[in-house]
Amino acid sequence: MLHCRAAAREIAQARYDVVHAHTPGMVAFADELEAPRVYTVHHVGEVLARYYAAAPGPVWRVAISARQAALTPVPMQSVVHHGLD
Image: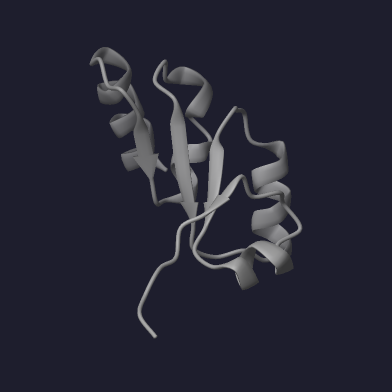
């Protein structure tokens, strides 16, 4: 979380078109960033689902597969397939 906080502060001082995160901790600092936020959700369980629901936003959540999106209790805005057959 300390790394995410430091990264969010650096990002907030710069001008970016979009911020793409892969770490759940970055979602906690989404409201401090002016650029649109995209978060690739790699893992979801009950605890993370509650965290995502309570985190500030908005954050565009992207699932790594259609199956993950279907099984996730938190709405996903898009699917970007991850991995190979």
